[in-house]
Length: 149
Image 1 (cartoon, helix red, strand yellow):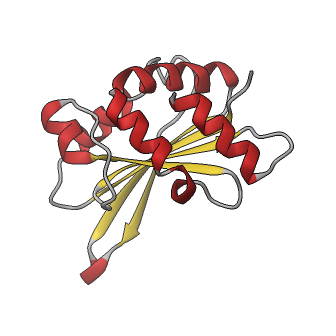
Image 2 (spheres, rainbow, N blue to C red):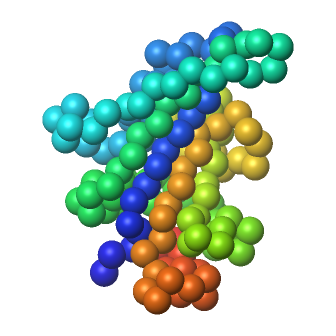
């Protein structure tokens, strides 16, 4: 059963942060070789507060094999408490387009190589496009329950 249509992972890098380290951790979240699978890390530059240049790295996983591999790996990185938290917060994490959002703290991943969920903005943003059919919030919430339980 297909759980998600696609997955997008995005991270913003401030000028004072180590962009190579953050990019390395982004790559490590994905359990297969991006270059081998012909998936590019998109790089953009945006202007932040006080004219600061912010780097934005984005990876789009569109193929079912890629999304399944990512989810399997990601679920193994989460502990039971984190999975329960995602289920408990499912209503607020799911938007009207059936996208489910997860944020992973950047610092915890960089320093401890550990997944730590966060509500803050200094994070890796993961967007799961939930494969609900028919595409209703109720069906998407059921899939989220199945995914994290």
